[in-house]
Amino acid sequence: MDYLLIEWVDEDPKTFSVVSIDQLADGGLRSSGRKLIGKTESIIWTRGKEFLGRILNIGGCDELTVEADERAAQVSDDERLQKVEPTRKRSNISVDVPLKKQKSRRNESSDRSRRIGDILSHIDSSTIEGILADDSNQHNLEGEQEESNETTETNEYKGKYRSLRTKYRELKRKYKELLNKTNETADVELYEGTGLKMNVAELASIKMMSSQSSSVLARNLFRRLFSAEELTGHSLYGKKCNANATLPLPEIDPARRDAVIGYIIKEDGFDTPPPAGISIAERKSLSKVRKRFKRDITKSLSDFLREESRKFQNAT
DNA sequence: TTAGCCCTGAGGAGCCATCA
DNA sequence: TGATGGCTCCTCAGGGCTAA
Image 1 (tube, protein in one colour):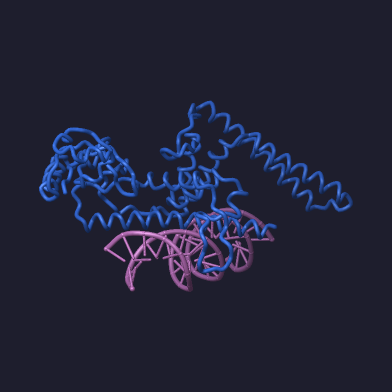
Image 2 (image 1 turned 60 degrees about the horizontal axis):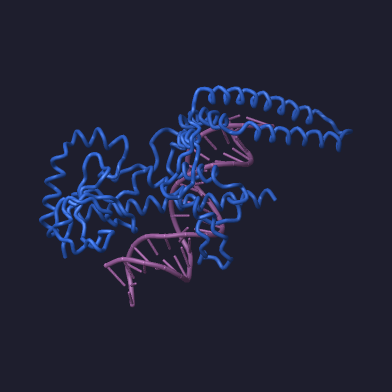
């Protein structure tokens, strides 16, 4: 069987892989032989994903592997460090990506509180008005029903309400300030091909306040993209739990679910083919790390859905 | 055929913020 | 300062699934 030496398109710095000719997406080209050299074609990678690659050579696996190593060596280490580290692109060989940042939780919390303030400033002010109006109506209702029982407890509630209203006005003022400062109102597709769009500034804010781990980011995106009703009473994949005889919960909307999971995986640089020039053992190790990462994300989200359901049941 | 992984559900631990 | 509650993560169980 023939093999192809591929230079991945859109890779900076350049990366190379040796792939079987069967991995050419266009099956009709597989008999074209050396005519393929120099052409840019779709290559089928793991899980059926396709990536564009320029065909540099065709031949035996061993000789092409040597050539790939030589070409990779020509790319300077300095260039890799400067361009790869900050973006964690497909060519990032390091698989030692910490799932949790080592920052102390105490510092995180103080940071997060500031970020939450920013997030709240992006919430539609009419929504907050509605909440406060409900709160106010609730107080009025209680006042009518228990007119004879208006104790100091009621006064405390009124005090808390006034305090919340002051906070709300402050947030509203900050919200308007930020609106004036930024024009980032455009939507961006969360994950390529899903069609699920989110506001750029909102997505950035959620990322900021979810810096502890990818699991937290995934959960916060679920909170943003699914309603409380959707989060309760659904499981992540709707599959039967064999450990229990109970009926499986229905699957949560797969389009939004997959968009979130795909986005998280992409953000951590795990949706890309393995870098060129690594051994089979390293390739297997990388594959394990990727599987482990996805498992952690889906596990956390699955936990999250159960927790939401449990909270809902406790409340009713 | 079989080892390893997947997935859901349950229970509990650890950390942190809030409150009395 | 201790109690409490929320959030997140970890571990385990157990049958199905899948690749070797």
